[in-house]
Length: 484
Image (cartoon, rainbow, N blue to C red):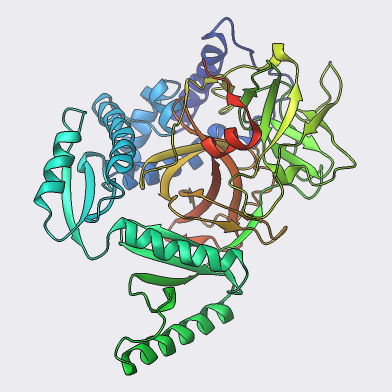
């Protein structure tokens, strides 16, 4: 065991040096001041458990001895840096194919979401499962059109019969969103479409409000039955609606500067932005048409208009103190993004994310177009408290989040989740604004985490995260994410 751990530690050090020298034009992490104890990449035993869970989730062999063996061979290789868990060569090829299917699924949803028999499309649970297509009835024409539209060779399609079209679910979810936004329905935290179960999910702030809503729905359905279906129908009577207790949603910003620690002084996504209200995390570098350069972070990190000064990387930069530069409508209700800009020198901006201490230079090569995100698609984040973690998208369709701190409703966000070993209870404050991405594809920035309601399972804990979509962020702030 000690020999394995020593080999892993040595290989980790080698990987860090290799990552820093991989691109001579990149801004390199200054190792001085880095606290490696904050990064789970250096806790081998913890990561073995994390990697086992990640592999099991994709239907891969997850035996501890097997994972340790391939970890010894693979640590520091891109397979571990990109996926956050070690893969064999064959598994890596299958994972690359799955990422290709993700992009194809997003394109197909754009094409067919308005078809009256199209019920949604998402990734299968395991690596080789392909794409699952929900259809209402047996629409041979739609099935044929989808098969013809597929551009990627070897794409697997499985058609599943469901009761409700995606357009119908969208309409019900929109009713709920409007009601919640107008505050005519107290206690609704959000609503979204679960394409896997073919339902609209409505989440409530607490159990008392949830039980009240269930009773109201029961009474409303009984009244509809007594009247023979006459009378005004609302979302409460709709059959494909599931009522659930929501998580306590809190902005993931720090309450003080002392409970988050420091980061690095390089200007890139994933580093600490220390503002008047505490620490946040930088998302991506961005630019405006006039050539000005910025770092993007969460809008709620800038809640004090009288104190806009920030330091970047957990310490004052040699060029002095920087400032938040507020985008339009950042803090208003019903905004499509929770985002703000921090002005930086043009020479310090680049297409980089500080992913982890073992890979401080991760290149962002492209930005996700459009607003359709695919359920079960891979997604990762790098931030002060979440570190570098990858998981799967739960949903993004008609999902609106009202956090429990500011009460601000952010519309059309992405919900995703990953697992941590054991009974995980870490405070996520400090991760707000951090980059959300997959490989080199920018997906969004962290809005919030589901706190105080972790789903503890046997030997693992489900952690839920929320992100503003990158297209909304760029539109709100009038910037383009820098890629390269």
